[in-house]
Image (cartoon, rainbow, N blue to C red; front, side):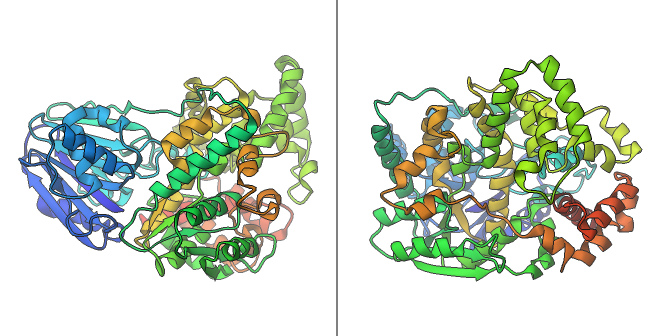
Length: 629
């Protein structure tokens, strides 16, 4: 795993400033502490920081073809590189290394942008072809690896693995994007392709760029999407057998490494499945890592230990304490823009633990998105069933009125918390799903923002993100639609971002077998009933895993990877929240309704309301402002 940076002069072939490229590259030292190097030529500069995992002896970058007319900087792993290397050798290409990086160089020479259709892995790269005078940038199918870019007013195009690499460059604008702030307080992260800065973008998953001298039109081009194309199968038993065969093959392909390799093990279905299938592929002891909490409502370490005992792994556990609030400023520096998923804290800790024992770790991320595992899918489908029986003309006014009248009972059992459900039922599926996943619903964001800031939004609302994706969704059933929305928003914007930054902070490579794009393609085509069957999410995955995992692991109530945030914010973090959220800096930003900030803090402290998610989002936004003031 690595960090990459680059500069490209779209307006001509001016000399690239070496010191500027070096600063950008060194800002990513944590991503690649083993080696670093630069390549500069007229109008082009490429930088690379390396974490050595494969071809330790000869895989240094930037890496060239035979005549040095093509050069690449690459972050990631190509799992089918050996097969591609053999094919390219037969086609007449000559290799001087055993690295997957060089495979991309020759694949570009052979197939051009269509080479992306042949790559199986996680990747982000920048490739300069001097003969064709084109800079080719690409990001993997589902967005495991990040890539940011910006076109400066002087025609200089910049890219990097993290936002911080872009922002070290002189001339990089720090103007905040009001629509990104609205998105952040709705989603808890800033969905691709936006960043917090109006002049910096993320390259969308499954997209590439072709940038040329004299052309300032930088347009993202899609090369892949989740297809949801129906998969034929003869019986449920055959489907289970094929699922295990496919997933075992993927896990095996991702266990190739020349450095110590292990796995995260939370005790949930997905990470346990990965560990179980790793054990089928490797007779040696697997190293596994998990975190624990003192609060039994959040602690799953006993289940992780069960799996570790069954497969005799070399298991390590670390307790996450409520003093982790000291990480808030560190997290702001890691993510470079506001990021409100509080599970970033335990993710940081488990990556810290894993790096003490391994350099590469496999994770179970992607299982919920693939197999319909989130509780919110169950709620969304139940709401959709009710919607289908009542015309919108009746639903909208009736349930909207009920939502306004019904109190927000944060303290009550789930079945009594009807306010959000009533509000969702007054909407269509997309609007209702957005309402359900928002960390702050529309009514709260309307109160959160100042009149001045609302005017800057010019009527923009975060729901537009989901509506735009829904309009292009290749799906026919409601469950597939909400899964597709998560593949476009929550998965790359939250889950994969969280793990990438937390792991790279410790120079740890994390691989994600359940997000192998060919596996995703196949699973997407399974019938909705094989994913969410009644109230049972991950139906076919759990059935397939019964020979490998106990029912305790497969069928207990899902907890998720979270922290006891509400109690922490009323206890050890109480003063930090008050001092930070109500700080003068938040007033000076002119974004917030200060009276409402006081309301959120006071109501949560008193225990009358649970505003923990909103307050954490504000806490992390304030940390971002402090880090960038």
